[in-house]
Length: 270
Image 1 (cartoon, rainbow, N blue to C red):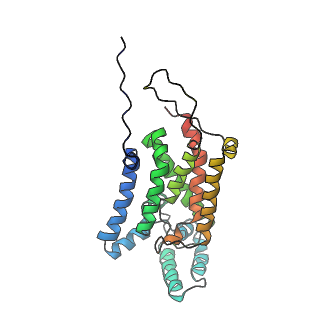
Image 2: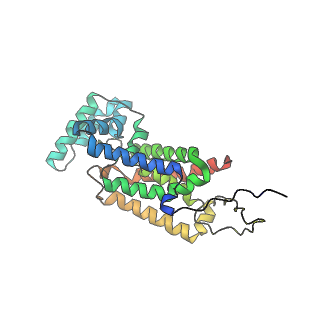
Image 3: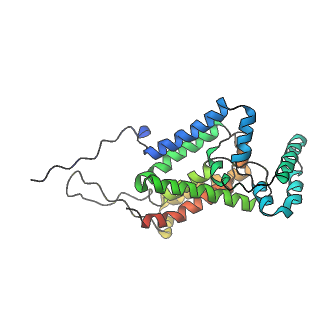
């Protein structure tokens, strides 16, 4: 007589049922913001922003020093006189010590402008990172999040190369996980009749783009996401003083890489 296999564990309360890698990710983001908010002196926090945030203008003049004059001119654009003066001073600092700082294409995602900002991102990370981590494991979850952050930062630099505003926030990485989850979470449950009561249904395949466009739930979700990101580009949200640097283009870059990278990772899923 066959031995009875181990039955799947009973589900915990959903709030505490996140995969370990997602819980760890959220803990890291909250801990970093708490360290900056409650522990680091202001001068250290400023150092952290300067060296770990992604600053498009610094990258641009490091790659092409001939654009230093354009950077200084852009920093003097019309606006509040105090703000213009601060931008110009920072632009001169960047011009005097240009540095590509390639690590900032990843590290900017660890910093946030306020508690509202970091909590907003961690809520979405819990919602859309969890199904990706359950389906693909910690490694592919990490690859998608990192690729989203890098792609979002790269698109932001391409579209706003002379900006001296630090780009911060995990939104691009979260957008990549959100796009990846959208490829499979909006399907109806598969018609599956297990031979034994403890057997679980096989994971659903990814929907193709035409299938997604015929899926009303997925279309509504994607439309809301696009409209929301358009609003990010025209409305200043109360996410902290640096929030305007968390740009819609970074979200879009992360979303696109997550949407199109996932099928490549799915082919090699064990």
